[in-house]
Image: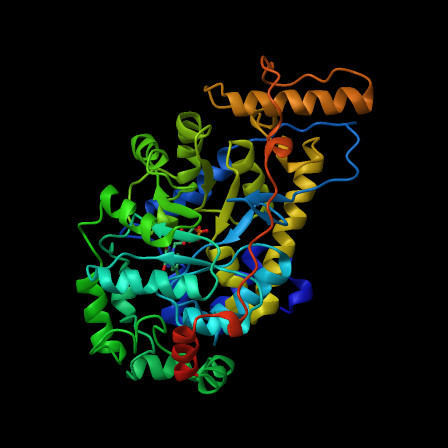
Length: 451
Ligand SMILES: Cc1cc2nc3c(=O)[nH]c(=O)nc-3n(C[C@H](O)[C@H](O)[C@H](O)COP(=O)(O)O)c2cc1C
């Protein structure tokens, strides 16, 4: 199937399965242990039903919004995905370029193949950096400093991977980067000529942020030992404080899937949380994150921006997340399948399809601005009544009254005269990245040394 015949994310997934070496395709398309949470992440979205509204003047629509004060063309960011550069040669660079052109944030994983500096060199707008905290706090501080020097405009701190859950396929496949030259791998690679050719043309074949930056870690075998022993099981809220001080910029806490944790996170001085179960890759049996969204927004939505990931495969899913109170969403596999299928063009295709689906869903639900989407768009709104949602419902009612001259029925009766979020949100442009020439000399020489 060619890209012009692709109509949805599942099509991209099918192409990616054919083109990407088995161990890396399986690495993406898997969850922890029985994969029950992985499956439920998608199933939970299907259970949510929308209200179909008609005759509501749905021209001039906008899905643009902001995430931690930065303008985005739709409520989507690319989630951090380890080993993206194994789905497609130089995958992080391809995905970052697609995101940049589309006007959505790209988040580079600590466990990326292309390094922070490589991605900075290949892009012109700030991207975001995701931090895994290792026992070696000196190394964590160094990563933060490198992200700053590269002009990253937000730090995503992942809290749900202090230890790695088991994904059975990875164990069976002997996952490594680059793949080990076993008979099974060689046979599989023989059927992936485009991938092999691309890999031969790049030097980025192992963990770029780590290899060469940690003493004694130059190749993958010692690196995997190092990683296994270095993820920090003692990470706690005090550590978050420590990171916040070092970073001193927009901070997003990723992996909150519980109301109590959300309350603590909101008090930790971060700018946003991502309600996430890591795409079903960590605690098997955890709730689908979309099922945890409404109670978490109810508890902390007036204190901190709440984003959501895990299970998003369509614009309809994004709409549902926003209707349940998410300011924005992150996508993992939805863009990874596009990348595996066709590099930058595949990621762009994924983003285009998601935006089209989101826009048309919004229109058919009777809305013209993503900022006004809320509980009133759901057939069965969550039991919790909330200030933010009431404000949205009121705003939607006012807009319709003005345009149609009649009062529409909304699910929630607005009580307050609070401003809609769109109007209240201060739309700050993303900070400009320092040009390489303006970057500190130390960083310039480091990246030059790597190139
Ligand atoms: C292959 C793969 C690798 C991932 N690597 C990371 C990572 O390095 N850091 C991180 O914080 N999350 C990582 N995640 C989790 C994603 O950031 C995100 O939470 C998840 O993919 C969302 O679920 P979705 O794939 O259903 O959209 C990874 C996810 C996948 C699928």
